[in-house]
Length: 265
Image (cartoon, rainbow, N blue to C red; front, side, top):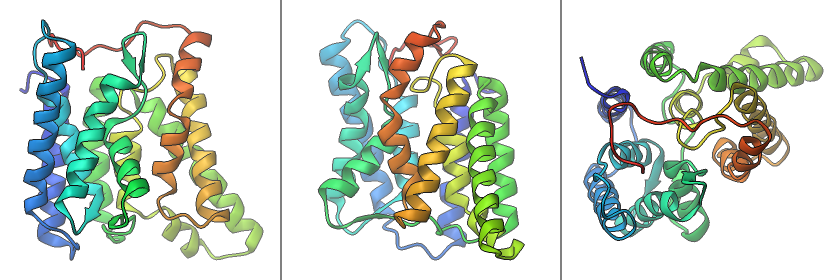
């Protein structure tokens, strides 16, 4: 058995990355995985040495961040990957309240690259619609969420988002196939199972997490259907991330901490 929940997350994200490269026709530069990995680890080491010199250097968090960036972000320039990885790790040390960062690192890096460069993109449909991908994502994500105890976040996000899409589909008189097509996205499942559930950057209480996830689903629905933004989920999470600090004040609960690990970031 692995010693830390994050070890399972690293394992599954790594397997998904290998699966995607070997079975999907991605516009992808395999060497950029190494660029993302090295940049994340190096940035983590430098900032930890400067800001938290007495704390054990954490390598699990930058590994997870680098895998998330590699799975979702596409670019033709290695400098764009460096920008995404650097800002992703840096966001943990800069944007925090009461020793808790409120931006998901990988999401922050992806949005930064999309905003500041002209050669970065995310392909929400890169996984296609094969049902077995969904089963793999749900299986891997379920194991991790069961250990971390953050099923409420995923359930609230997917529940609200799927309900809104169902109501819109019904209102427009579309067939069920259209509705299923809107939900059959591997990237959406990866987001719901591995990104919006990061216990170190989401609200601490169950009530707060459910409210926060429901709002992210609502904003995602609006951005996707009325502003036609294919990367709506990432912008929704980015825009509502600071709300975590307010929710933690309204519904106080001790912060989540990874058991058995001495690192803070």
